[in-house]
Length: 200
Image (tube, rainbow, N blue to C red; front, top):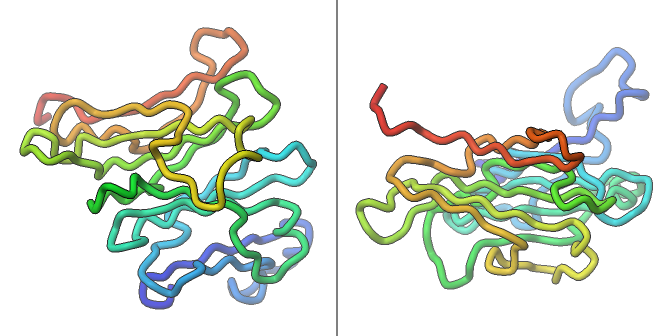
């Protein structure tokens, strides 16, 4: 949308009726704070962060800043009362990096740490280091939702609760993360699919 700036629409099912164009049925509509190439809306997940009844929204904008990427966090309470809500929090990459990581290309949310609040996983499968053997190794960061009230207006990935990095070229850790209670202990576990060593 708008020369790759991107856009996210919230469509309320109870009010949808017979449908219509996105601009007619979207309420609210979330535009990126800047009109640069953001790819806003490439990933999106709902989660509960702030202890109220409204579901909050995390929206990936992996095209931001030339492909460095970012994730915008919107309070659910704001989404219900504003036609053009402003992001409440923002997560960006390490400010010492100037790479095309596409942070926020994939998102997942669930309860990893056992707190009432959901936790957020941000994937950047295009992440790579400086060596030829670090190309597209990928990276994923885990953010504890219990800490969300303490997040700064702009928070950086080094402040994440945990991080998981790839070790081989084209492993692309962070692509399509999923959460599932594998060991039946009441906590969700993180599933991170990767590319195999074989060209097959």
